[in-house]
Image (cartoon, rainbow, N blue to C red; front, side, top):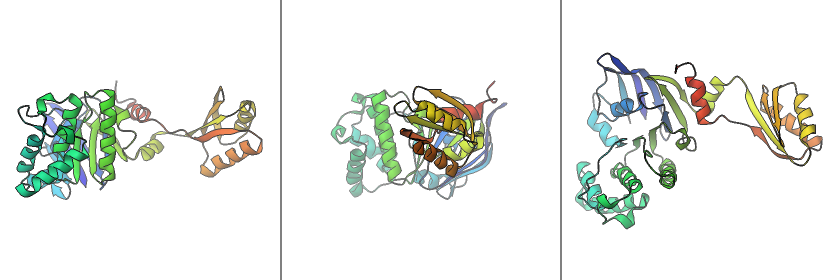
Amino acid sequence: MIEVLNFSKRYGDFLAVDDLSFTIGKGEIFGFIGPNGAGKSTTIRFLATLLRPTSGEGRVNGHSVTADPMSVRRSIGFMPDDFGVYDGMKVWEFLDFFAVAYEIPRNQRRKIIAEVLELLDLSAKRDDYVSGLSKGMKQRLCLAKTLVHDPPVLILDEPASGLDPRARLEMKALLNELKQMGKTILISSHILSELADFCTSIGVIERGKLLAAGSIQEIEQQIRSHRVIKAQVMGDGRAAAEAIFRGDPHVRQIEAYDRTISAEFEGQDDDMARLLDRLINAGVRVHSFGEEPLSLEEVFMMITKGVVS
């Protein structure tokens, strides 16, 4: 659905993006992560046909970004990180303006605008002036205008930037709903907790270079030399559980605190199941047991370690 092929962008002597390549499949939610200035917005503006590459190519929904930009624009809904809204307009007029720009026939526009307003929970604001909307509502309105032509691909640059905690949660719920609708979404952010809950894959960019791309699980397997498992036990079972952990041939290092045991584990799923069986057979009351995944923040720090200096 989205392909970036050896994309580079140079501004004078400064190389902003260096030979970037990645693919986003249909229906994926791709989190494009990296610090400010890493090259995220440059790449996004290229895919949105707003920036010519120094070298390389991109394809969106089967269309060439450089050779067929108009078809790309019809295929995407683009939400930039810094957008303007027309304060003299009412909400419905703002959406109607973009519906006209996308050549949606007059007899269809009213129905489409009503549907988009309902999806974004803006129906009650239909006749309000844009100037009177809160920051969060303006973000919703900008997202709404990216949807009026029902594009299969959404490209969202820092969509939750500047929002308060409630508005961030509401934006996350909206993105999950769009995911359920089957949209292919590229979303950038430097706030990693915004992406961890709903992204199916990620790309990590630092200083213009793509350091890793794929599902979080795939990347974790690449950068982590061992698994970490955690068990929480009930009552006074920690001592017995710790002894069983220490006697397991796949356990390498143990941390025990309160009623929790955390251990580096080099076995497979079957080995984990056997360890759990031994705990239960020994009479240890197990509250929870399983592999402890890395957080997205930990993944990012492990990938970029040594790059930032």
